[in-house]
Image (cartoon, rainbow, N blue to C red; front, side, top):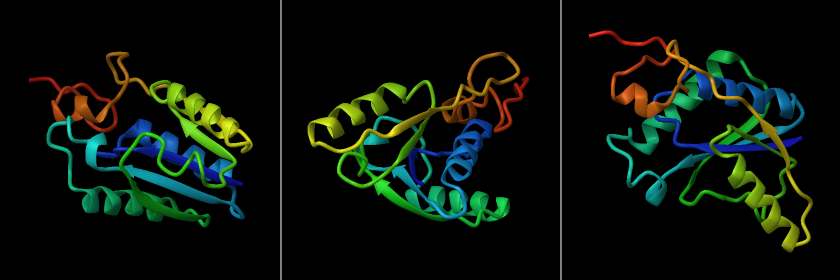
Length: 152
């Protein structure tokens, strides 16, 4: 199965790990995983995002540490659709935040007479305070990458 997912992946946290793990589990050892790593206009409005190369290195390290045997590639994407509309994928892994984009992708694929992607939804991973873990919250030092609240 050819699986895709995308994101900024600035400070890989517990929620990102759940998305990545689900992508590799869905693809299986004979499938492949495409990870679209945000760049350009997708990150321009965000504050203090790590450079693309460093984020890619951290993704590679996580995947290596998990020991996944599935083929994968990490490529830059500079719009929220990446190659998902025109390329051949079977499934897309999303969070509640990106479900709507996946639905838009399927509408665009339908207009091009392409098969829709299976949308695999992962629920938010909540921090100790029951608010979703996010890189923004980590950068702002509200929580750590595991979702533990940081007390001053």
